[in-house]
Image (cartoon, rainbow, N blue to C red; front, side, top):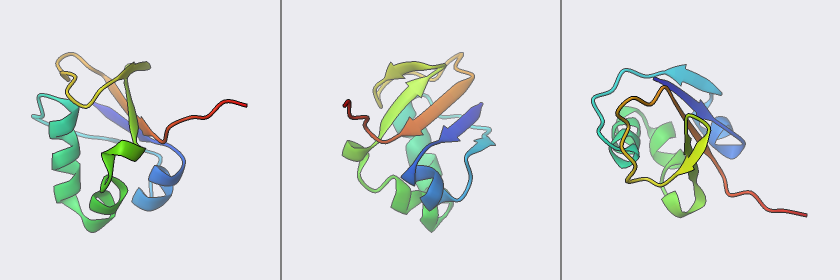
Length: 81
């Protein structure tokens, strides 16, 4: 699946997107796999309260299943104005 990173997540991880082969069942499982890769992922995902996720461009939560998902996007919370 394609994984996209936006704003400060992209800056901390060092890439805007990547293709990830995963056996993760949920978003939370995927984040755990990513954290285990390298320190830069662990830092970026150290506080999930500051991260939002979208699956195939639909907002989701971290317990959402990944079955059939083609794109996961991680980004900080948005503010209006």
